[in-house]
Length: 86
Image 1 (cartoon, rainbow, N blue to C red):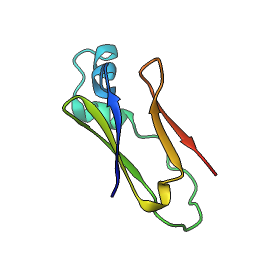
Image 2 (image 1 turned 60 degrees about the horizontal axis):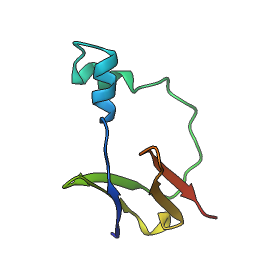
Image 3 (image 1 turned 120 degrees about the vertical axis):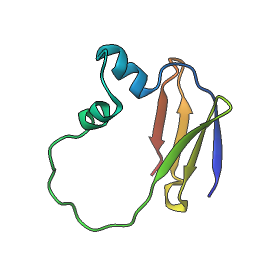
């Protein structure tokens, strides 16, 4: 799978941000807080995905062939932006 170097990433992880707002919270509580209600079943389709990994302070995106129409960038606020082209 191709990798794309998205540059240096600064800031808190999602868990660190949650932990600041929920002092004393556990990893399990954080994970539970991410769950919402079950949504309706969608139509069957192909599985296309992108994963993200930080290596030596750089954010890398790994994606399937079918997600190559997506552009991943870090904006001026240090936020990840995903643009779908077509």
